[in-house]
Image (cartoon, rainbow over the protein chains, first blue to last red):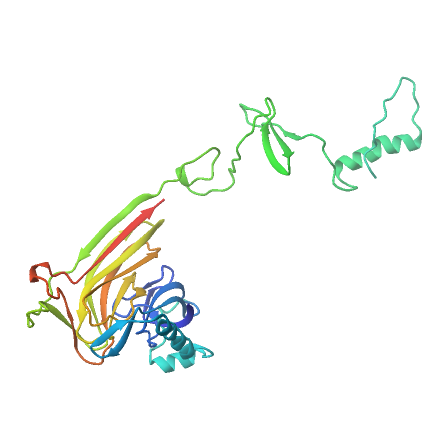
Length: 109
Length: 242
Protein backbone atom coordinates (compact mmCIF):
# COMPACT_ATOMS: atom_id res chain seq x y z
CA UNK A 1 0.00 0.00 0.00
CA UNK A 2 1.25 3.46 -0.85
CA UNK A 3 0.44 6.55 1.16
CA UNK A 4 1.10 10.22 0.59
CA UNK A 5 2.10 11.76 3.90
CA UNK A 6 3.47 15.14 5.01
CA UNK A 7 7.12 15.25 6.00
CA UNK A 8 9.06 16.81 8.84
CA UNK A 9 12.75 17.33 9.66
CA UNK A 10 15.40 19.81 8.64
CA UNK A 11 16.56 20.28 5.05
CA UNK A 12 20.21 21.26 4.65
CA UNK A 13 20.50 21.15 0.86
CA UNK A 14 17.29 21.37 -1.13
CA UNK A 15 18.88 20.73 -4.53
CA UNK A 16 20.67 17.55 -3.47
CA UNK A 17 17.86 16.52 -1.08
CA UNK A 18 20.06 16.33 1.99
CA UNK A 19 18.73 16.54 5.52
CA UNK A 20 20.15 16.81 9.01
CA UNK A 21 21.13 13.56 10.69
CA UNK A 22 19.99 15.08 14.01
CA UNK A 23 16.57 15.92 12.59
CA UNK A 24 16.32 13.86 9.40
CA UNK A 25 13.77 14.37 6.66
CA UNK A 26 11.07 11.79 7.33
CA UNK A 27 7.31 11.22 7.37
CA UNK A 28 5.50 12.89 10.25
CA UNK A 29 5.13 10.81 13.43
CA UNK A 30 1.95 8.92 12.68
CA UNK A 31 1.41 5.54 14.30
CA UNK A 32 3.66 3.42 12.09
CA UNK A 33 4.40 0.84 14.80
CA UNK A 34 2.66 -2.00 13.03
CA UNK A 35 4.07 -1.34 9.60
CA UNK A 36 7.40 -0.97 7.89
CA UNK A 37 7.83 1.58 5.15
CA UNK A 38 10.17 2.76 2.40
CA UNK A 39 10.45 6.22 0.91
CA UNK A 40 9.38 6.03 -2.73
CA UNK A 41 9.18 9.72 -3.63
CA UNK A 42 10.16 12.85 -1.79
CA UNK A 43 8.72 16.25 -2.70
CA UNK A 44 10.47 18.95 -0.69
CA UNK A 45 8.57 21.68 -2.53
CA UNK A 46 5.20 20.19 -1.64
CA UNK A 47 6.52 18.87 1.69
CA UNK A 48 5.08 15.43 0.98
CA UNK A 49 6.42 11.91 0.62
CA UNK A 50 5.07 8.80 -1.02
CA UNK A 51 5.86 5.78 1.15
CA UNK A 52 5.40 2.09 0.46
CA UNK A 53 3.82 0.42 3.48
CA UNK A 54 4.06 -3.22 4.47
CA UNK A 55 2.34 -4.70 7.50
CA UNK A 56 4.29 -6.09 10.43
CA UNK A 57 4.62 -9.84 10.55
CA UNK A 58 4.19 -9.71 14.35
CA UNK A 59 1.13 -9.34 16.53
CA UNK A 60 1.65 -7.93 20.00
CA UNK A 61 -0.49 -9.58 22.67
CA UNK A 62 1.05 -7.52 25.44
CA UNK A 63 4.01 -5.36 26.31
CA UNK A 64 6.30 -8.37 26.46
CA UNK A 65 4.55 -10.89 24.32
CA UNK A 66 4.31 -11.26 20.58
CA UNK A 67 3.51 -13.94 18.01
CA UNK A 68 3.32 -14.21 14.20
CA UNK A 69 0.47 -12.10 12.86
CA UNK A 70 -2.26 -13.75 10.80
CA UNK A 71 -3.04 -12.40 7.33
CA UNK A 72 -6.25 -10.89 8.71
CA UNK A 73 -4.27 -9.08 11.40
CA UNK A 74 -1.76 -7.87 8.85
CA UNK A 75 -4.58 -6.51 6.70
CA UNK A 76 -6.01 -4.74 9.75
CA UNK A 77 -2.66 -2.98 10.26
CA UNK A 78 -3.01 -1.51 6.77
CA UNK A 79 -6.69 -0.70 7.23
CA UNK A 80 -6.05 1.08 10.53
CA UNK A 81 -3.36 3.26 8.99
CA UNK A 82 -5.55 4.03 6.00
CA UNK A 83 -8.43 5.05 8.28
CA UNK A 84 -6.02 7.29 10.16
CA UNK A 85 -4.91 9.31 7.13
CA UNK A 86 -7.77 9.13 4.62
CA UNK A 87 -9.63 12.33 3.80
CA UNK A 88 -7.29 14.39 5.97
CA UNK A 89 -5.51 17.49 4.78
CA UNK A 90 -1.78 17.89 5.55
CA UNK A 91 -2.51 20.48 8.24
CA UNK A 92 -4.79 18.02 10.03
CA UNK A 93 -2.13 15.31 9.88
CA UNK A 94 0.52 17.67 11.26
CA UNK A 95 -1.81 18.49 14.15
CA UNK A 96 -2.61 14.82 14.67
CA UNK A 97 1.04 13.76 14.78
CA UNK A 98 2.42 16.72 16.69
CA UNK A 99 5.30 16.86 14.22
CA UNK A 100 6.58 20.31 13.24
CA UNK A 101 6.56 21.48 9.66
CA UNK A 102 9.57 20.80 7.47
CA UNK A 103 12.38 23.29 8.06
CA UNK A 104 14.01 24.48 4.86
CA UNK A 105 16.94 26.85 4.27
CA UNK A 106 15.88 30.36 3.34
CA UNK A 107 16.09 31.03 -0.37
CA UNK A 108 18.20 33.92 -1.58
CA UNK A 109 16.09 36.67 -3.18
CA UNK B 1 -0.90 21.15 -59.07
CA UNK B 2 0.78 17.81 -59.38
CA UNK B 3 4.03 16.67 -60.87
CA UNK B 4 3.65 16.46 -64.69
CA UNK B 5 3.57 12.75 -65.13
CA UNK B 6 5.24 11.76 -67.32
CA UNK B 7 7.43 14.79 -68.07
CA UNK B 8 7.33 15.51 -71.77
CA UNK B 9 10.24 14.52 -74.01
CA UNK B 10 10.78 17.38 -76.39
CA UNK B 11 11.74 16.95 -80.05
CA UNK B 12 13.72 19.37 -82.25
CA UNK B 13 11.80 22.39 -83.52
CA UNK B 14 8.89 21.79 -81.16
CA UNK B 15 7.16 24.98 -80.16
CA UNK B 16 5.42 24.44 -76.77
CA UNK B 17 2.04 25.93 -76.21
CA UNK B 18 1.29 28.14 -73.22
CA UNK B 19 -0.49 25.25 -71.55
CA UNK B 20 2.40 22.86 -72.11
CA UNK B 21 4.99 25.33 -70.88
CA UNK B 22 3.06 26.13 -67.72
CA UNK B 23 2.53 22.48 -66.96
CA UNK B 24 6.03 21.24 -67.75
CA UNK B 25 8.05 24.13 -66.37
CA UNK B 26 6.00 26.26 -63.99
CA UNK B 27 4.09 23.44 -62.33
CA UNK B 28 7.19 21.24 -62.05
CA UNK B 29 9.17 24.00 -60.33
CA UNK B 30 6.28 24.76 -57.98
CA UNK B 31 6.09 21.05 -57.13
CA UNK B 32 9.82 20.78 -56.39
CA UNK B 33 9.68 23.93 -54.26
CA UNK B 34 6.83 22.43 -52.28
CA UNK B 35 4.47 25.28 -53.09
CA UNK B 36 1.57 23.00 -53.93
CA UNK B 37 2.00 20.32 -51.29
CA UNK B 38 4.62 17.85 -50.07
CA UNK B 39 6.91 16.81 -52.91
CA UNK B 40 7.47 13.06 -53.06
CA UNK B 41 10.98 11.87 -53.86
CA UNK B 42 10.89 8.43 -55.40
CA UNK B 43 14.29 7.19 -54.22
CA UNK B 44 16.43 9.15 -51.75
CA UNK B 45 17.75 12.59 -50.96
CA UNK B 46 21.51 12.86 -51.25
CA UNK B 47 23.51 15.39 -49.24
CA UNK B 48 27.01 16.35 -50.30
CA UNK B 49 29.88 15.98 -47.86
CA UNK B 50 30.94 19.61 -47.56
CA UNK B 51 34.12 18.98 -45.57
CA UNK B 52 37.44 20.16 -47.05
CA UNK B 53 38.53 16.56 -47.27
CA UNK B 54 35.21 14.83 -47.94
CA UNK B 55 34.72 11.22 -46.91
CA UNK B 56 31.47 10.56 -48.72
CA UNK B 57 28.01 11.84 -49.46
CA UNK B 58 25.05 10.55 -47.47
CA UNK B 59 21.56 9.65 -48.57
CA UNK B 60 18.34 9.85 -46.58
CA UNK B 61 16.19 6.88 -47.42
CA UNK B 62 12.99 5.34 -46.11
CA UNK B 63 12.73 1.56 -45.97
CA UNK B 64 9.68 -0.02 -44.35
CA UNK B 65 8.78 3.23 -42.57
CA UNK B 66 12.28 3.54 -41.08
CA UNK B 67 14.36 6.57 -41.95
CA UNK B 68 17.88 5.44 -42.78
CA UNK B 69 21.09 7.21 -43.53
CA UNK B 70 23.17 5.39 -46.13
CA UNK B 71 26.46 6.00 -47.82
CA UNK B 72 25.92 7.41 -51.33
CA UNK B 73 28.77 5.40 -52.85
CA UNK B 74 27.94 1.89 -51.71
CA UNK B 75 24.48 2.32 -50.08
CA UNK B 76 25.94 0.98 -46.81
CA UNK B 77 24.00 1.73 -43.62
CA UNK B 78 25.52 4.53 -41.55
CA UNK B 79 24.97 5.00 -37.82
CA UNK B 80 23.76 8.41 -36.76
CA UNK B 81 25.98 10.99 -35.18
CA UNK B 82 24.60 14.18 -33.72
CA UNK B 83 27.43 16.64 -33.39
CA UNK B 84 25.03 19.28 -32.16
CA UNK B 85 24.19 17.44 -28.91
CA UNK B 86 27.01 18.13 -26.42
CA UNK B 87 26.52 15.42 -23.85
CA UNK B 88 29.70 14.32 -22.14
CA UNK B 89 32.72 12.59 -23.56
CA UNK B 90 33.86 9.05 -24.10
CA UNK B 91 31.36 6.44 -23.03
CA UNK B 92 28.74 9.05 -22.12
CA UNK B 93 28.89 10.80 -25.50
CA UNK B 94 26.09 10.42 -27.99
CA UNK B 95 28.43 9.53 -30.80
CA UNK B 96 28.58 7.49 -33.97
CA UNK B 97 29.05 3.78 -33.55
CA UNK B 98 28.44 1.14 -30.91
CA UNK B 99 29.41 1.90 -27.32
CA UNK B 100 29.73 -0.08 -24.16
CA UNK B 101 28.43 1.82 -21.15
CA UNK B 102 29.93 0.25 -18.07
CA UNK B 103 28.90 0.61 -14.47
CA UNK B 104 32.01 1.25 -12.43
CA UNK B 105 32.55 0.95 -8.74
CA UNK B 106 32.35 4.33 -7.08
CA UNK B 107 32.88 3.34 -3.49
CA UNK B 108 32.00 0.52 -1.12
CA UNK B 109 32.02 1.01 2.62
CA UNK B 110 30.69 -0.65 5.74
CA UNK B 111 30.66 0.03 9.47
CA UNK B 112 29.90 -2.49 12.17
CA UNK B 113 28.91 -1.29 15.61
CA UNK B 114 31.11 -1.88 18.58
CA UNK B 115 30.14 -3.71 21.71
CA UNK B 116 27.18 -2.59 23.77
CA UNK B 117 27.95 -0.80 27.01
CA UNK B 118 25.91 -2.70 29.57
CA UNK B 119 26.42 -6.11 31.15
CA UNK B 120 23.78 -6.29 33.82
CA UNK B 121 21.91 -9.39 32.77
CA UNK B 122 23.72 -12.64 32.33
CA UNK B 123 21.57 -14.06 29.57
CA UNK B 124 21.12 -10.82 27.67
CA UNK B 125 24.82 -9.99 27.75
CA UNK B 126 25.40 -6.41 26.69
CA UNK B 127 22.95 -3.62 26.11
CA UNK B 128 22.55 0.05 25.21
CA UNK B 129 20.10 2.50 26.71
CA UNK B 130 18.13 4.63 24.27
CA UNK B 131 16.51 7.84 25.42
CA UNK B 132 12.73 8.38 25.11
CA UNK B 133 11.73 9.12 21.53
CA UNK B 134 15.41 9.12 20.67
CA UNK B 135 17.66 7.19 18.37
CA UNK B 136 20.89 5.33 18.89
CA UNK B 137 23.23 5.21 15.91
CA UNK B 138 24.51 1.65 15.85
CA UNK B 139 26.74 2.23 12.84
CA UNK B 140 27.57 5.13 10.56
CA UNK B 141 29.67 5.77 7.45
CA UNK B 142 30.53 8.95 5.59
CA UNK B 143 31.80 8.78 2.03
CA UNK B 144 32.15 11.07 -0.97
CA UNK B 145 30.12 9.92 -3.95
CA UNK B 146 30.54 10.69 -7.64
CA UNK B 147 28.11 13.12 -9.26
CA UNK B 148 26.85 10.37 -11.59
CA UNK B 149 26.47 7.61 -9.04
CA UNK B 150 23.71 5.60 -7.39
CA UNK B 151 23.90 3.87 -4.05
CA UNK B 152 22.47 0.80 -2.39
CA UNK B 153 22.35 1.09 1.39
CA UNK B 154 21.85 -1.76 3.84
CA UNK B 155 21.20 -1.53 7.57
CA UNK B 156 21.31 -4.65 9.72
CA UNK B 157 20.58 -4.97 13.43
CA UNK B 158 20.48 -7.96 15.70
CA UNK B 159 18.89 -7.46 19.05
CA UNK B 160 15.94 -7.66 21.37
CA UNK B 161 14.26 -4.55 22.77
CA UNK B 162 13.37 -4.31 26.42
CA UNK B 163 9.96 -2.92 25.46
CA UNK B 164 8.12 -4.88 22.85
CA UNK B 165 6.55 -2.91 19.99
CA UNK B 166 8.51 0.23 20.82
CA UNK B 167 11.76 -0.06 18.89
CA UNK B 168 12.13 0.44 15.16
CA UNK B 169 15.20 0.17 12.98
CA UNK B 170 15.86 3.05 10.59
CA UNK B 171 18.17 3.47 7.62
CA UNK B 172 19.27 7.05 7.00
CA UNK B 173 20.96 8.09 3.76
CA UNK B 174 21.98 11.69 3.28
CA UNK B 175 19.97 12.91 6.25
CA UNK B 176 16.76 11.27 5.02
CA UNK B 177 15.06 8.35 6.76
CA UNK B 178 14.62 6.23 3.66
CA UNK B 179 13.37 3.04 5.30
CA UNK B 180 11.99 2.01 8.66
CA UNK B 181 11.15 -1.42 10.04
CA UNK B 182 7.96 -2.33 11.84
CA UNK B 183 8.22 -2.37 15.63
CA UNK B 184 10.54 -5.09 16.89
CA UNK B 185 9.06 -7.80 19.04
CA UNK B 186 10.48 -9.18 22.25
CA UNK B 187 12.35 -11.85 20.38
CA UNK B 188 16.00 -11.97 19.47
CA UNK B 189 15.82 -11.22 15.76
CA UNK B 190 17.84 -9.85 12.88
CA UNK B 191 16.27 -6.95 11.01
CA UNK B 192 17.45 -5.85 7.57
CA UNK B 193 16.61 -2.71 5.59
CA UNK B 194 17.70 -2.14 1.99
CA UNK B 195 17.27 0.99 -0.08
CA UNK B 196 18.50 2.48 -3.35
CA UNK B 197 19.19 6.21 -3.51
CA UNK B 198 20.98 8.81 -5.58
CA UNK B 199 23.54 10.76 -3.57
CA UNK B 200 26.51 12.90 -4.52
CA UNK B 201 29.29 14.58 -2.62
CA UNK B 202 30.01 13.83 1.03
CA UNK B 203 27.08 11.95 2.57
CA UNK B 204 26.47 9.95 5.72
CA UNK B 205 24.51 6.73 6.02
CA UNK B 206 23.35 5.51 9.41
CA UNK B 207 21.88 2.38 10.96
CA UNK B 208 19.73 3.87 13.73
CA UNK B 209 17.65 2.17 16.43
CA UNK B 210 14.69 4.39 17.31
CA UNK B 211 12.92 4.22 20.67
CA UNK B 212 9.27 5.21 20.26
CA UNK B 213 8.62 4.75 23.98
CA UNK B 214 8.19 7.71 26.32
CA UNK B 215 10.74 6.27 28.76
CA UNK B 216 14.30 4.94 28.61
CA UNK B 217 14.46 1.52 27.03
CA UNK B 218 17.25 -0.93 26.34
CA UNK B 219 18.30 -2.85 23.31
CA UNK B 220 19.84 -6.16 24.33
CA UNK B 221 22.40 -7.72 22.07
CA UNK B 222 23.74 -11.23 21.84
CA UNK B 223 20.84 -12.81 23.61
CA UNK B 224 22.13 -16.11 24.95
CA UNK B 225 25.38 -15.67 23.04
CA UNK B 226 28.89 -15.03 24.21
CA UNK B 227 29.63 -11.38 24.88
CA UNK B 228 32.58 -11.47 22.54
CA UNK B 229 30.27 -11.99 19.54
CA UNK B 230 28.29 -8.92 20.44
CA UNK B 231 27.71 -6.62 17.48
CA UNK B 232 24.42 -4.75 17.51
CA UNK B 233 24.22 -3.43 14.00
CA UNK B 234 25.93 -2.52 10.77
CA UNK B 235 25.47 -0.24 7.81
CA UNK B 236 26.90 -0.72 4.34
CA UNK B 237 26.74 1.31 1.15
CA UNK B 238 27.75 0.23 -2.33
CA UNK B 239 27.95 2.94 -4.96
CA UNK B 240 28.21 2.54 -8.74
CA UNK B 241 28.79 5.19 -11.38
CA UNK B 242 28.76 5.41 -15.16
